[in-house]
Amino acid sequence: MKKMMDSTTAIITTTDNRVLLQKRDENPDIEYSGCYSLVSGYLEEEETPLDGIIRELKEEFEHKKSSKVHFSSITYLGSEYRADYDRWEYIHHTYLMDDAADIRILEGESFVLLDMDECLRLENLAPHHKLFLLKYRAGLCKIDVREQSKKMFDEITVRDLIKVESVGNVKNYSLLEAGTGFVIGEDTTLSASIPAVEAAKYIGFLQFVPKVLRGNHYHFRKVEYMLILQGRMHATFQKYDDSEAVIEEIWEKGDLVRTLPGCVHTLTALGESNVLTIEFSPQPYVARDVLMNDKK
Image (cartoon, rainbow, N blue to C red; front, side):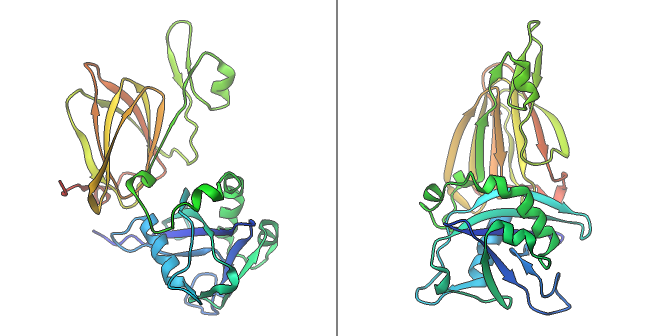
């Protein structure tokens, strides 16, 4: 596989909502030398963005009194394409659960903890990281620290790679305008509004035939969303590096499913009718990023 120099980033906040920023070294060979930035790093060739940010957190921090720094479970926020470097950046969030006084940073000059407004006023904050903070600050307020602290950042299961929500069926066009669901008209025609949190840059219409398996593959870079327009779907999931933990789900019309990189997904139409779906992604289809599952 050709090396893909995409990157992965963590917005790290404390339980009192301060943001951790790294002060980069004064080195002309690194991006935004001497600036403040979020914690980030390049992805390795066959590494998912989630695995990559876990590795970066382990490499860049150490605890002065115990064996490792305690971060909460990681929340995927979104991805952004950087045209200036022709690469994708994947943005995540985690809480620092330890006292900052007990933490030592191993890369960069130092770190600081600032509230969000202080961060955004910094003149020497890496501009793309300022963009990430501006875009995702509202979403950060919705992350429950009590729920996220139930697991550590490196305790990833297949369930962490899937998110399913129902956009529902309604007969109210004002809801369609708000981007919250389907509308079934009086003449039984169907419109669908997709409440996407990421840009739907690449959109496909997929038809699934009963008793025919599709998928059984995973990606290292592509984030996929699928909206069920008609029918019922059987889905199985597992982590690409763990063939033991397999989960199964049944999707119904109106379900919107997000599948993160590293999740093997296999889909089958249920019943006697075809299943109709819309699939969309921020990232384009790249053949080398479609890896068949060889773990049975």
